[in-house]
Length: 154
Image 1: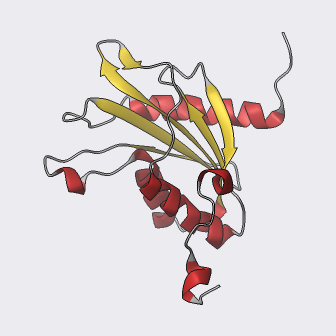
Image 2 (image 1 turned 135 degrees about the vertical axis):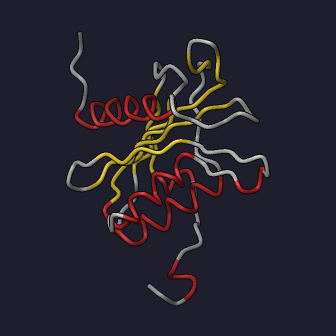
């Protein structure tokens, strides 16, 4: 068995935590569960899961839930990476063999943390069972992002 690169190990740990978080998804309308797990500079992992509402516009994505939790702890600028997993909710858990990616809103929210920390956040996108994982930089998924500098604040 080949050894995993350190970044692959970090991604696997984040995806495993995201899978655990996804078990608590509140997705009675879409029946699509998503879990996220942030890695902070000090090694802390902050989980999040999607939280739907009957008024769809009030629903929260897993990534934004995790980012809000990091912010509450005063750690938003210390986000280094995030693992994301999701799929249809089936009787035995999540179903799907294609990695999911953060939506546009979540990419923009991640960009805020990236700007605060002055880093390009690593994003691990995984399939529902975690068997397929792809590594990206935020700048690849959100080129030409709008941020504080565009408001003259950087």
